[in-house]
Length: 147
Image (tube, rainbow, N blue to C red):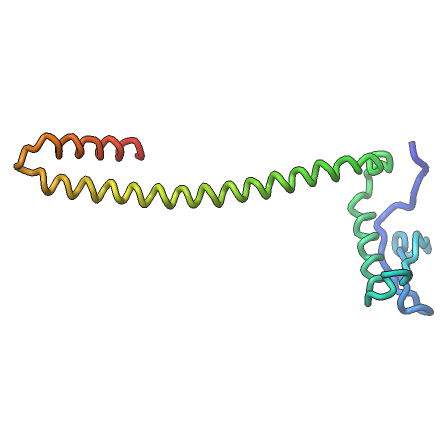
């Protein structure tokens, strides 16, 4: 069991003396300062990075309220799982796009079969040509298979 930590929610407060520094404070009126963000290294080159970092830390802290620290420390392997889920979702999206294209091609073929059926029916009527009747039956069978 881990030691007790400051309960959330945390909130961000800009420091009065250092306008580019922000504090992560415990519940309002508790007087608890959990952390301070300051521009340092590469972050010093990015405007408002200190505030953005403080807000992100507070948001993560607050979202994880009630989750044991040990469970959070074991989350690292989940990053790999989430990456795998992301890759799978991207693959599924690609497959969906391919399926949509296949469906469009199938509709074109279905429309062509219907036109062929109508054409053959109009030319076979009264001629009794066996070849045309076989083709007409093949087209009708193909249409039944697509229904």
